[in-house]
Length: 581
Image 1 (tube, rainbow, N blue to C red):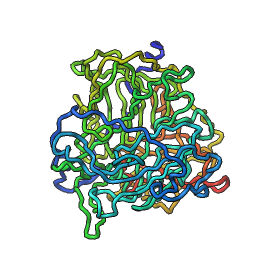
Image 2: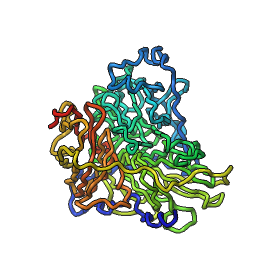
Image 3: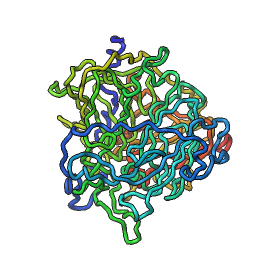
Image 4: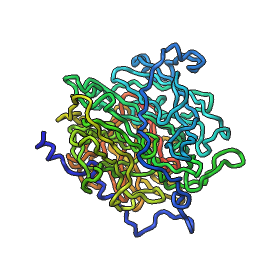
């Protein structure tokens, strides 16, 4: 074990970002004279770090199928005709979520203790909503049905003034039919609901395509960024016979489980002097017709308060044993270079193990001292706190300096970094049966003989808006017709030399073939199955992917969701064989 990990120890679990440092000699983005970012002009109220415990979201609770037919459950039984392959994957569990507005407490210091108006999720039996939403624990082979009922106030009637109350909830990056995917045009207005069938089988029924850490978030056309920022997201975790959520069971990976398996979603937020979350540099108010103002940045949204699970710089008490943390960059625009720093210890980062990328368990763990996360990227990591003493404190630190306009990295690393959360070590309460396995998921083969065609997508900036192949998003125009069960090779090219784009394509994971014309090193965490490409300045990435099991429309877009909203996204459709372009 030690010898193998010594080989994999490369200090670059997010490696390959060496090419992401922008060339700052040319200003690709133009700002008004005298532009001052709002976090400089109107910073958030001061706050004490590490005085509020981490919020650990509750596990979602199912309801009976009959509950869906009651008034509280939407008043309608599931309609099998709305879903592809419904009877083949008959749901075994049913859930009802209400999307609502409520006061959420990010911190106990004034003025945050008064509560910040937020959007989030409530389920039957809960007194009020929460953000992030409930964490789903689901199993492969057990399809589920989720009804999401929009109880948000109508436009102009609520307290969250920067978002639009007609959401559509996307399960990122589930192998899900179009009608259940939560694509941008499938939004619902207050008083309406949308039904989602999650079949919970791996793509192509290939166990090597099994997923683990997924998340759900709003995807409303043109308003994804403010709606997610308002609170509409949460975790969806999938388990199988190997990643079994049981650290004691022989024959499984025996990864840390139960209360030792903790999802962490990172958001940076800006607040006004009343402790209310505010959006953007212009802090828009509704216009005379009660529609949100369009005068917000097209480049990115950066907050000056770091939150984890919607708590400002929390602390988390950990036993001196192994933990699995599912670390997600929830956006909207900030990029992270994350280290562990022991209080009073050396400047170098503490070692830990990366076991997944974008929800896909790696072939084998990688020992490193950092991870890098573009928006929507995920890494499951294992930290072994048994090497520390009770009373030690370990900080999660971000050292990537982001541009104040939110469009990407400055190219500088912060010497001290920003402390995001603190782990406080206490004595273990019992033995630790969990393991760090030698091997996990074998990568599925790349079958070049199945490749039907290649496509090039160029990401650029034109006259204040973000484009793909020179076009803006049109939900009524499919930009690619992909034949079902085929494979294709896609190339993403960043035409800019200062901005960055975390590009996400729905439905299936892909395997990267080349970055700037060079094969991906086998010890690079990107030599894996991914659903987000972190596309740096002047960078080009080529990958192989397949499209199986369902038909219908999906999207590909930049997951700096401000770019997505303005309008760096395309629609692509899976069509029957013989009908592709």
